[in-house]
Amino acid sequence: MSIRNIVLFVVISLLTFNSCKEKEKNTTDLAEYKTPLNLPPNILFILCDDLGYADVGFNGSTDITTPNLDQLAQDGSILTSAYVAHPFCGPSRAALLTGRYPHTIGSQFNLPANGASTGKGITAQEQFISVPMQEAGYYTGAIGKWHLGETTAYHPNNRGFDDFYGFLAGGHKYFPEEYRQQYKRQKEAGAKIINDYVLPLEHNGTTLQENEYLTDAFSREASRFIREAKNKNKPFFLYLAYNAPHVPLEAKKEDLDKFKHIEDKDRRTYAAMVYAIDRGVGSIVKNLKKTGQFENTLIIFLSDNGGHTGHGANNFPLTGRKGDTWEGGYRVPMFFHWPNKVPKGQKFDFPVSSLDFYPTLNYLAGATIPENKILDGKNIWEAFTSNQNPHDKETLFAMRHREGYTDVAARQNDWKAVKVHQEPWKLYNITNDISEKTDLSTEQPAILEKLVTETENWSKTHTEPLWFDPLYLEQMWNDSTMATFNQTFKISQD
Image (cartoon, rainbow, N blue to C red; front, side, top):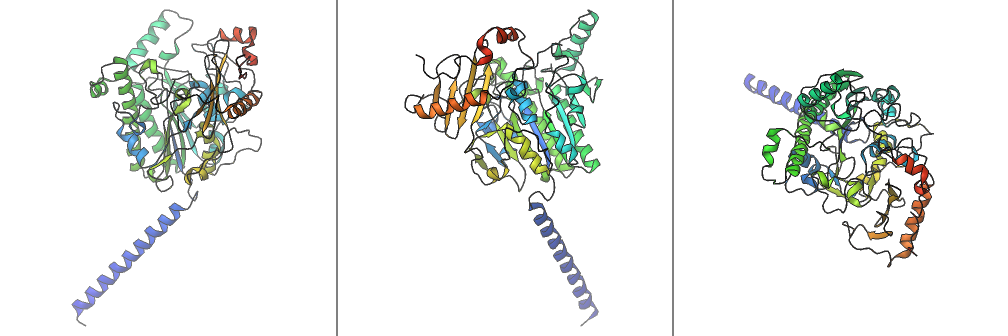
């Protein structure tokens, strides 16, 4: 063999050897990656505020474009029957983070605004979802809206979150130059109570001056947190709670310009606010890919309750809006995304509850939940990934106390019983009748009676509210039969 041929033989052999080793390495890595829970996942939890069921492309929007969210949804699973545990912001968030129905821990109402909630917050006896993750070695963060307590004992940094950036109350204005001026005027006027919506933002207890449109600021901080987690070489849990598209309806001009085709001013501004969320999620995804964390990150997206149709939202085809126990009040858009772990292109039509996140996410994190921790949801991961009904034996409840009476709903599998506005109980096959148009209570009285009885039994597990919003409801609660659910569980109108 000539020297030239010998050299060629050696070069080809080395290339073949390296190629085989690289192929072996890639195969090993892929096999390792596909092993369930071999590597604790990062968890990015994206919560919107008052987002309508039909206000994202993946859930049917025709006038609001959300390309980044749609891509994640298409590459993951869309959960079409996703519910939160209450149709209002504060109680819904309390349920999500504690894994408990808010009615069982005294948080049936929103925390009152503008200083009236001082010293109040979600009881410290309830360990938040972040605590077991923190103990399991996760870097934990909360960004955006809190609304679960404003004093030290209830601060995010004392509820299992290593890092917090945002505001503690129930809402905020979006443009810094506007809310800073309003804050300054109120301070100079000697106001005893400063409006929550203009208070300075904070980072881990220290107030700061933010200069960006609020939604953009929260997206920026999410990327900052993700980079920090990478540098710490820790898995992360990030609770990213946008306050958009909650009022006040305020949007950037460049975002508004994209929706000139929408004639209604509120709807146009609302659309631009949703688009700003989508832009932000797009930038966060780019950051996850840049830092090499995207492939092992579970992204969950949803709203805290139904959209407010009086402020630009669209819940089609659902009946009702934020605050209702009709589907439009607490059935929300949702998707899961996690490459090679979450089924791609799946529509998961079985009911799931935000109460399920506590046990499910801590399971995925390999975290240990204390034995004495009461949970009202369940670990749905196995059922979800195998496209099985995780709640075929459970009933999901919703309840909202109004002025002197109570709206309530119960869903089990195909059936939903609902009572609203002091009207008689109604029954729907919610699988076939998502818009709740055909009342079947007279055709299926036994099913209705069963659901109402279960709901009444559930109500007996409730505790007294720790606060009221509006404040005058406390007097109504004490002076009337509101606290004893008078007539709520009576089916007959005789």
